[in-house]
Image 1 (cartoon, helix red, strand yellow):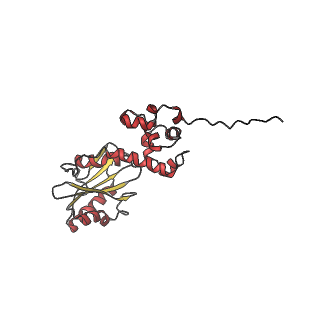
Image 2: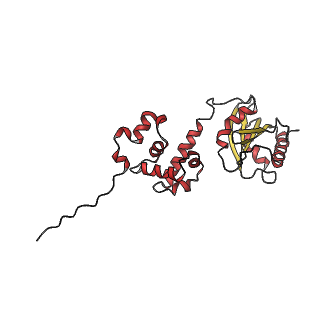
Length: 234
């Protein structure tokens, strides 16, 4: 009786296994992260045997645009084959860490002008696709104590509760604040609602003895200071 020999099925090797150690993403990142391609950086974050294929899948889904990847919801990232919830969260965290590189090195930067304040929040807020309102808490020397997100949605006088904007300042005993919000349209031109909200904040600040030093509107690479324009502060 003749014995039939059945060969085990062959599976294609993952790309990671075909690369010498020096060309693998983790090794490349450990040697010189700045010289790595976006695909290599993503693969190192993704990890696992299929990290290169998964990274290529992410780049294909988002057209190789790292800003689109940053803006994507975790669920959208997780829907890419091989990603999943935990990996999507790691990718979002890694990109958020990259943004922190643009923040001032000084622990407590001093605000001497609207441009100083805008520089702290502009890069991150220019990427947001919804309106967010943040409050910059300042001490008596105009040094930044913290930047707190207090609201997101349409910034208009009928929806924003002005008292909530001052809550972080009251909790931290900050004598002054600067309000900052973004226009996803990239046009920082103040609207009538922006002026009305500013006027309400100025009045509330006087009652609470917390000075509203400015209200900045971020629109892409531009910003507008309502204080400089005399809107809502008169």
